Image (cartoon, rainbow, N blue to C red; front, side):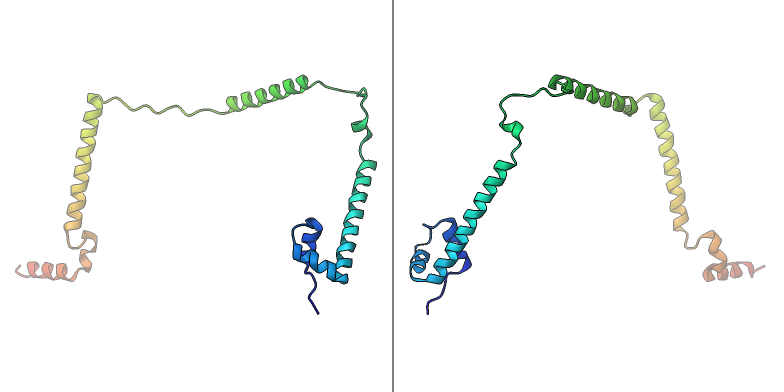
Length: 162
């Protein structure tokens, strides 16, 4: 018993009958495959006819009617375009009114007063850094010296000769 056509081969025959010659030869020899393809082909034909008839029945008549009808409240396209331009201008104007741009930052011009102020700042910075260096160079902070054993023993030895 030979095998029957698989669904992919049947769909190929329905879509493009000339594409698969081996499937066509099999259909000539196999009655069940031939009846299956014929049944599907009839179903597709019926569906195509039903869709065509439905679309013809439900097509709007005004699309097929060559005489234009008078419509109420017609507004020309130019009026719509003008209204759209006016609305966009109104939106743009309101945004520009509400938006306050930040003033641009301009670099300052070096003057003698600015350079002397910078010199004072750099001197105070140097003094601050020197103070930090001296604080860090001590082995124990002054507030913690009572807790330092070596500092306490030094204090007792220096106070003993009295």
